[in-house]
Image 1 (spheres, helix red, strand yellow):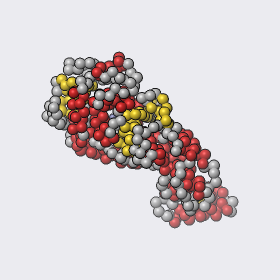
Image 2: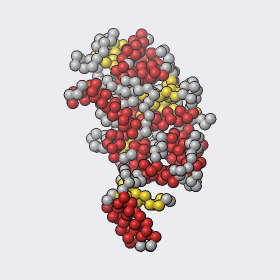
Image 3: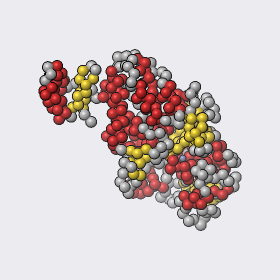
Image 4: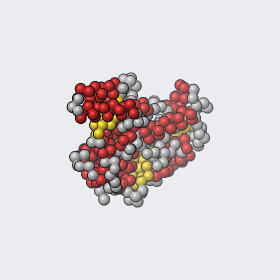
Length: 453
Ligand SMILES: [Zn+2]
């Protein structure tokens, strides 16, 4: 069996992945806070961990992928105040949109997608354990995690004590014992969502939800914890501290064994930001481009590398898919048995999900002659990346939505003109169709047409 190597942020090196239980691989990735549309950076995380799950599923008999929905958060409360819409309506609406948009990018829904609001009891139990072990304290209706109580705090991000304090978005609060302490529970006003707790009516901080939900659905320790690189500190650092301390563990790997972080997405060379007005929403993109082209674009850089997003790159990847589908269309009458993923592609994916290499290997396959074997290889490689699984003729748009006898008559006339070497007339017909938004594609089976895009 091929061995999967992953870069483990916790150990700062690429390591051969050794599952804790080879019969059941368990992974968790931090999901979205649902109060607006997901941007392309959120989508990269979803696509990367969807791919990692698919690769793991080719290697191990059982894989459970958990990714949460954060449906209680101050930003959600603010969105409700701004729009007048009830919180529930906002979170359910954007959860559905998120799942629909990620499905358009070819992401399977995680095996388990727990909602924070359905796990408040688990979070309270975890906070109680932290207080009992002397790692948390309540003050002024708040419960805080006491950072200096955990000797190994900071081991994931490698941040020094000063950097931790500077990065902890410290509100100067009189109830904090230490400037780096972070909130596990906070009080809610009557007009804010809240749950009864030993510390009064309130709501959880963000970090505790992932500790509670990953443990509940995967057990501890589990194999892989993932998320965007921006979550390393403080979010992931705090998750580790909570989960280790609640169980009296000092080894950081007692929570999750391997930590996988995907890199940032920039847009046309710039950091995405509201002030630059370049926040690129998946919801807009899936209305304009085929989801499969967007997926391939997201996979065009290795997941740890920065990815620069551009319309040009989407178009390149769309063309790339056109080339693959054109070959599959040529082989449409051949029987394929797409069981085994070609070794070269498995090797690339097992090398820390080296997707650029996997795509280069797929391109190299196109040098082969058409054959049932080639068709099988392309489909099997496409299956693990979750591309190339559509009907090629439908992808290529041949014939448009319905057969059009006027267009077909012009195509026939063009073929006849070319046979008579009347290239002027042939070109004229091409231009006439182009003016109607129709593109002619010459294939080995003769010319076909499709709506230009
Ligand atoms: Zn998380």
